[in-house]
Amino acid sequence: MYLKSNINVVEFMRRVRECKDEVTLHTTEGDILNLHSVLCQMIFSVAAAKEHIIHNAKVICENETDYDLIRDFINEYPE
Image (cartoon, rainbow, N blue to C red; front, side):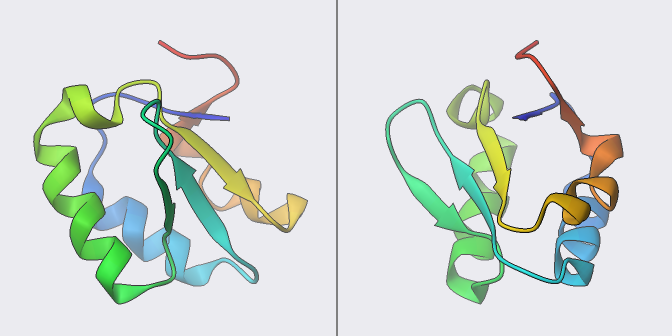
């Protein structure tokens, strides 16, 4: 799944914290951020302000049911 553009970062992170298992963000540059990590959340917040950095970033949930929690923020295909 791919991260939508112009998301509400605060609400997205709130939903990620509700996920049961790991949620990672994979950038097109090859970086992988574990979104349950506070440090990675801070990096993500800064990167989200510069949309080109997370444009077409892929979101991967370890637990398939966690996708339901973040469904409003992801697409099946990149925008």
